[in-house]
Length: 125
Length: 512
Image (cartoon, rainbow over all chains, first blue to last red; front, side, top):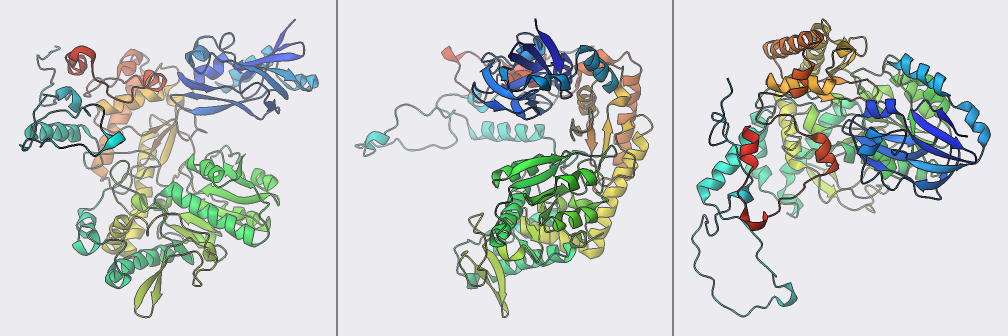
């Protein structure tokens, strides 16, 4: 069974046992506007929770995507660089950024669950 | 009533195809004799095909470029309130001085004895910059603002290495910094760490202190900052930075707000670049080269790059090499020659025309104009920070909440009103930012005209029924809303010949 958690920087992470899938939230893509460039990490890259993992650029601004958890990249979404609009269209599905292994599953408890993230976003707007 | 024209032109607004689309094969401005048939000596360098220059007559070429120039919008056309860019008037006197043959027709390789006047001008510019800032030295050669930043950081790196502190690899940069600051630090080989801003738009001094360590080489702070605010803790920042053994770099892109008001040396600054092309008026933003002289404290002065103009008796000489005994610790050379000399001429012309009292008034008027805009627009817009501001004011998009109108739509509507839009979505720490810098150039009448237009648009947006209209703006400009997303995702960077020679279609689409 998978569970989805969120960061304050608007990444989502879906934990599937010892691995996780990471993307940016619908709120984040809405704030960025039309996304025109995405750079995903290569397999094998070491990630530190809170460290830079990927880049997303819209017509408004360029932003970093941070690793929600520590671990190693298993796969970057190779389809995104050629179709960055996927992040706008399906941020929680086909618009995923990368898959990673987890060094320390205990870090998950530091992230927000759905209810906490919904409240976090509601407080921002 | 909508009128479509057969030509695609709108009144005297002429639709202009690309020059390659106006190709009439064989047309030329000059009548050349036939090329004699000779044996080629180009070998493998022989051209493989035609290079495809378009054929046009001289009047066609003249009209083409004149029409393109008329589509440009510049400070000479109207109000250009681009925040952070200081689009101020370029006095024509500057241009006249820069075209004096004694300045315009000299060459860097001339004997030093024949260019003493040019060296005196560089020295005069340097003397004014040192007097205004209170700093002990200035490196004149950096070619623009970011180049000046790099000059400052390379001086800092050289100073650390000379003092056995070469292990310091971190540069601290506030969140609200100009984007060039972290880029410069990275280029100079440093790791960048961000310092958060406080709610009121200043550098968080306490957060900065916690990040200081014996690994920090420098702190880069823009002052006045990109929120249009003076960093009131600048002296405390300098003291903390120096106590940690690091240097204080101040980004001087916004120096025009404080010229003649304070000497930045009194803030404890170690290095600052000055955008001559902004603060001291010369064309920029596509209109000409910049210049980014970097003023230095006594601690950094020995490491300033070559070339340097030095006074020798009654005349001048140039220190050209890093090993020269007159500048034994110079970190090296950043630029081929002495910098953007034409910009120095314009800057000195501006300084001498205004004088010390005039420069003092210019910075005051720039700040007064920005505060006037901020005060009047606050009737309908939402300032991001409490005033007073410095030379630029920033609004967020709270005033557009629930209207369906975005900052982008609002800015595009200003084009219909005949104004260049302000900076949008920057600084990043302000949601949906509109950053407005009027400069001292604008009269009260031109400010009032702008303000009335913005207020009227804000009232219209707030009716809640104008979202569709705003999203279609601009409606009156030669071009409607451009598709920025498609331009970024699928850029067309080069004209390519149309297969089969199809007729150009650009003009007719544009006229719709």
